[in-house]
Length: 184
Image 1 (spheres, rainbow, N blue to C red):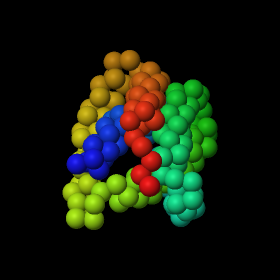
Image 2 (tube, one colour):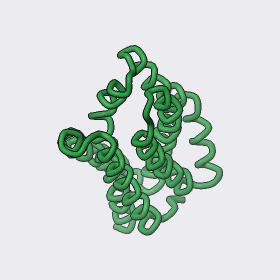
Image 3 (cartoon, rainbow, N blue to C red):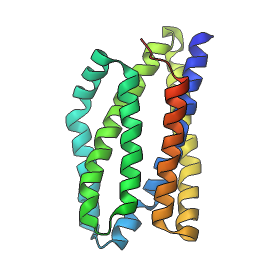
């Protein structure tokens, strides 16, 4: 029962990030296009994040084994906060490349460490359930996020929507720091 409480605290802490990522990714290509990027450049921007994530995932996993899951997850959430806020500040699509690189690193940290975190906390007989709850958190965030992101972009614009998304990740980070304990 104690493990479940720890897992629920973890899920609650990452939910705002999932809403934010759904908000941002539903509008990001449109926003970058508005900043002057071609369709090919938009593809290259997204590729940058994936390439960075692919390169550093094993290193991030090893780092979390050495220093703990919580510091790496906190880094990830800070990285998302900075990336989403940085998108709101750019005036030229070329600046999306380094932001996407940061995002790739933070997705690598999140993806690698969240699974390890859950495996650490969940009893072996409940790991499938625990991972399913993690996935549910993602999906619910991605149900709410794209709808909210599109609505806000229509009514207040891209930049305020990105700032609001960044603020959501701060909320999740605060919950994470206050309510989630190290998993090992």
